[in-house]
Image (cartoon, rainbow, N blue to C red; front, side, top):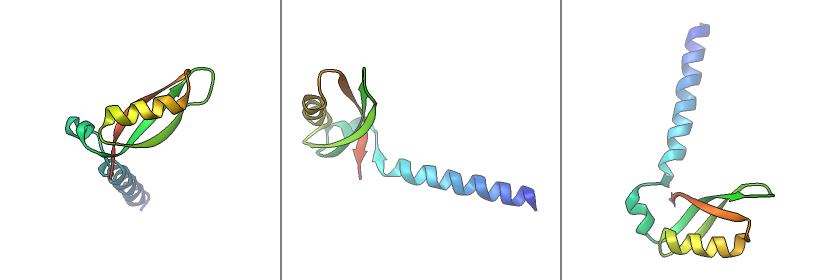
Length: 82
C-alpha cells in the first residue's frame, strides 16, 4: 500500500513539472518571436527575482527589462510564456 501511494505521488509530481514546462517555450526559435518573455534577473547586492517583459523578440524584451532593472542586475532569458 505504501509503495502504491509513493508511486502515485511521484507520478503526480512529474505531471506537475511537465505541465509547467509546457507553458514556457525555451526553444531557439522562441527567442525571435513576439510575446511575453520570461527572465531570471540576477542582481549583485540585492535579491534575484523572476520577471516577464513584452517584446517583439527576446533581445528587445531583455534590453527593456535591463534598463528598468538597474545597473546591478541582468536579466537572463528563460523562455517565451504561453
